[in-house]
Image (cartoon, rainbow, N blue to C red; front, side, top):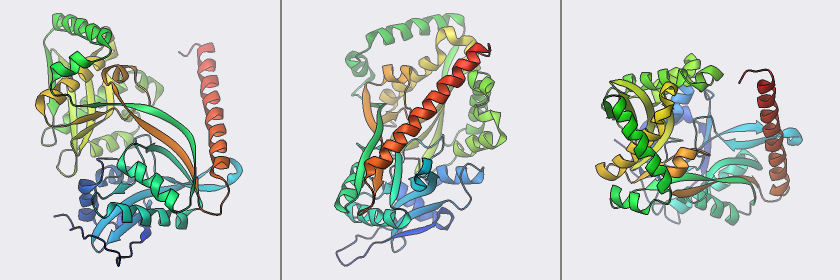
Length: 383
């Protein structure tokens, strides 16, 4: 049973508290996710507890929480990071599996007051914030910008990118008719015919009451057998991340549920997708495919079937690619949403642009290092 939400009045003084996420009431946390202004699994109890349980987040991970009685109105897990010689700055908690960092904020009359209290709390944590992966077009992202401006914070952009999303059309036929990339769709139909000639093809969806453990195991095996396994970055490459995946995509209900989609050829999985579903949005977190079947593009074929299901099943309204860049999903999903990275400094502090410039330099140095390592691997014949 979720905690009730009271409606703050002018006499209600909301204040953000700094406390460990372990101290949050589970029912109030789930209630906030269910009533948030926009669906997001990133700071849900399912996501954060899976991180903490498997060593991917500090056991004492802290958060800013805005409460009104037993009700939780806003939540932002955070940590500290060192940025060159500038010392420590605060930043929302991130990991390779966190895809957006907008705070969870309740919808309705309490939305504005909760954001104002959260903005005031940011200054008590740190006078400087580095904020990656902020969905600026979502209510909490826009609201955060507005709350910071009203509180006198200085904000400077660091970078941004457009994330592919797909909102459900009236029908799958309408989606196909309106799609701007007819060449991609034609190529997928050709590969689908070739795959059908190779054997019995079946698409399987496993929902929150199904055998998700078996579906996750199939995904882990596919990912481990591909380039991520060879590079040591597959979830199954480390016991902790394999256990994390099993915990995150477990069966069970709540405001965030797990889903798996599998493409099978003669019964064997050749592509798998693991998703979290929240507020009628499907967040497509992980995809893997059998590289031995690459000629059929099984990963792309599975994504196309997920698009078909969006229109035919009516169980969701949006697919969110949760990716920085994906040629396949970029082709299949004509919509885009802006994901930004910003620097913010409290009133009276140094200009935010100074911190933003440091962050941009750090990113450029890291990118150069990545390119140099890739070049070295090619020279050594490891690729």
